[in-house]
Length: 321
Figure 1 (cartoon, rainbow, N blue to C red):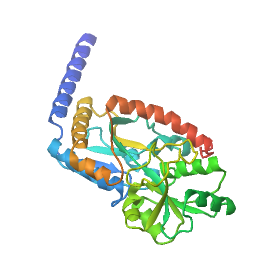
Figure 2 (cartoon, rainbow, N blue to C red):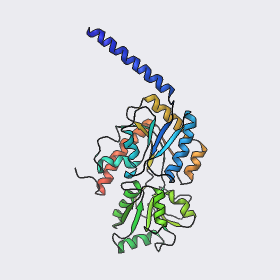
Figure 3 (cartoon, rainbow, N blue to C red):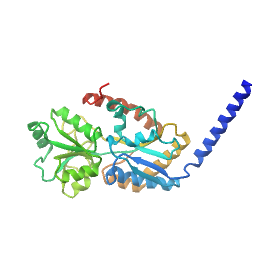
Figure 4 (tube, rainbow, N blue to C red):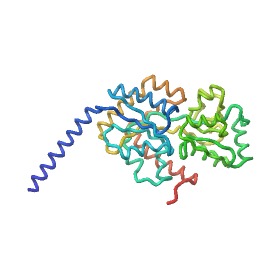
């Protein structure tokens, strides 16, 4: 009797595996939802929509972008926790996801509870001020902040995002105190600084069109080298700060998504990354393709999770246990 049950269970398991394999081979048979972490109109939204359109043509089904801003860019990753593991809901995974357990009580693991598909790009960052600001250079910025502790207001794309934490790290290294004002994304942030509500903005190069229009001025950028679009803006390293930040991000699926489905998504989005339309969209914001395959992206998640713990603790922002 027991042997018969074992044989029956084994046959059922094999049938289920075969069905799953067949389902994966036919994937996708309906539109795919790609949840991104920032509002419409910003550099993430614009570039990811081009990538999604490219991938949709390759997959033979539309990839529909859904904007879910707020909570430091972590809402799409949280949405994966309640989604079916079938590949039809995928999400952008910003760096802030790896900080979550250190600052917020959550019941899931950013490394173990996401199927990492591939990394697609990363941001170019910097600090800007209005073109008519008396803070003409970074030296002026630092001097004013030292003379007016806690009064120099700067906006970012959200609490615990890379622009916020990196600016706080800069302030800590320089011994200055700034006033942080969080926004839901670049579009809101740019509207605020142009409206005179804040003195400076720390952002990805979503500020580029405003700089080129003569409305904002770049005080510094955060890459290893100066940006071609803003050759006069020094890097943080040139300013004596040993900081480089480009915040890679990619695409994840729910935990347990079948490996053939992950591979299908990976292959389609990798091909989508290589198309000229995507590279052109990225170049508009001084971004470039940053490819990591599935295994490499999973390893990046593990390493980043550990590194972000150290940063959050250094800034004194870890939650009280």
